[in-house]
Amino acid sequence: MSNPDYSFETAALAGGARIIAGVDEVGRGPLAGPVTAAAVVLDAANIPEGLNDSKKLTRVRRLALRDLIVATAEVSIAHASVEEIDALNILRASHLAMERAIAGLPRQPDLALIDGNMIPRGLTVPARAIIGGDALSVSISAASIVAKICRDHVMWDLAQHCPGYGWETNAGYPSKSHKQALRDMGVTPHHRRSFKPVHNILYQDK
Image 1 (cartoon, rainbow, N blue to C red):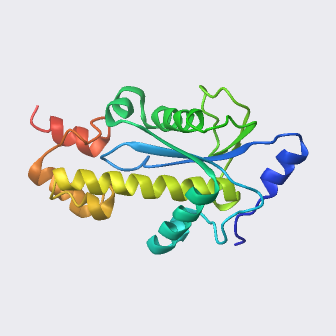
Image 2 (image 1 turned 45 degrees about the vertical axis):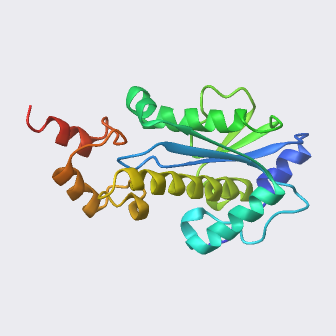
């Protein structure tokens, strides 16, 4: 398996684009917490070494790369809240977070490279969806790393207010211990009520 590279960006530059953003989100699967997206415009002359899909990197490596990305690139991070996830659905909410991340960049991109198979419908800039993009494009890899670290920190903070669910280690994902804690302690305001395991606990007595 080869590492992600700059070939999608190089092709876009050759086609006349100047500012190219990689965009990724993290947190579609958890039962709790926001969904978080990042948009990153790398400096072609100063790309951090070792960028890869955040899931393939150790936490220590991710943190080191995040610091390099923030120091060398234009970065924007945004969220969609639990309330928005429940009101819209997780796919639409993750797209909303992506739209917000792109809108928050200091310069609007000529092209957004989006991880996945769909382009968020609210985007106001040209975009290309790349399936498995976090393992193919270094710009998307950078976005995946920044988004993951930010969301992990959010979940660590929430864990201090709602101890017992293990969010500091499971980041809100449906681990066995998290699901057991839901059954034992009930649903918090940070749980996604539209997600089946949470919904079932809320309505099991009804």
